Amino acid sequence: MPRILVVDDDPMVGATIEVLLQRQGFDVTLTDGGETGLAALESQAFDVMLVDIFMPHMRGFESIRIFHERAPATPLIAMSGYAFASSASPSPDFLRMALELGATRCLRKPFTPEALLTTIRECLAGAGASAPPKDQKEAP
Image (cartoon, rainbow, N blue to C red; front, top):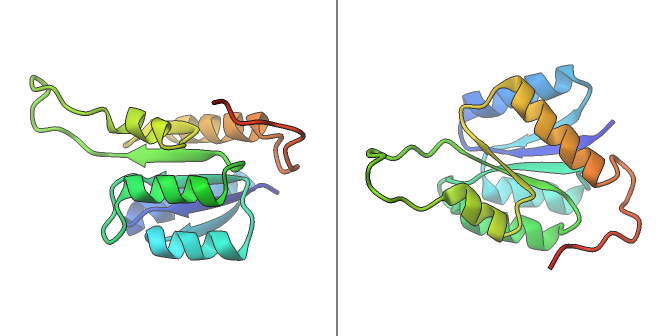
């Protein structure tokens, strides 16, 4: 059973993801922020990490970078629901920035259950599911 770490400060989002994934047969650990997510990562291994980009106390980009450094072989899916007030003004692409910091994939909130499950399954397939990667090297 694949183990998924979910790090999101919004209790409703976290609980919704947790229930969805548990119903699909995943072993889910839900944490409410970067610090608790890192503590969970130190105490057990995960097959995939879902990390919100914007959280209080530990900024999401900092979380993405640290989570990736601590578990570089574990696929990390960055999530963001950040909306800009004006689509006319140029704005940074936070999800692209997360990819540059080590995220494997990104999801823009709100996302559908199907999009979440597809993204997780693609990450698991790319990482060899629950098995440790065999001579897999990170792309430069």
